[in-house]
Image (cartoon, rainbow, N blue to C red; front, top):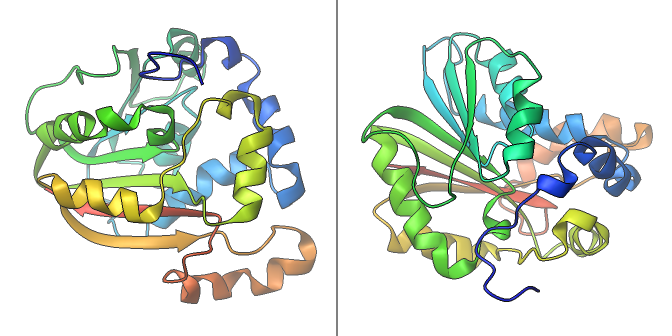
Length: 234
């Protein structure tokens, strides 16, 4: 790991990010787009898609998650921010309506207090130095409205296949995964109210397993899912 690491910058991976990610997750039986969309489908379990929400995609990368937020939340206004200027350039090339992307310094969210109904974060915190997590949470808390929701998706280091994928992925070289217990502890130390910690992705996505995928919703309590997410409320 590099010295003085604060935020992993994805500029060098931005143009080929999807191809690289596709190769990294190939053994799962799904592609990068699948994993972008499944997280947004998880949000549908908690949110009314017809509401005209103002949503922040924190650490939006090349905007793939924002694309699926727009698909499933057609009345939302979406903003995406990332420390990687090259990734933001890729995101802007998608030409998404009702979505605005901008780069930022990784510490100060460039919006006012109480602006957003929902902040969505996907696989970002393991690219941020752990000592900075509390300050980032303060910023996310600040820009959320009272009653606003924060969803944070992360890889689960308790899952050996997850560790294998992360260890072999070029842009995860400096990543430090968040144990669910640690993730819960930083939320508990913040001003947020932790509502849920759900585990996801228990089975491969190959055709042989598709019949059994609906049963995964019964396993959200089981701490061996390949990924997990928290829902917290301001």
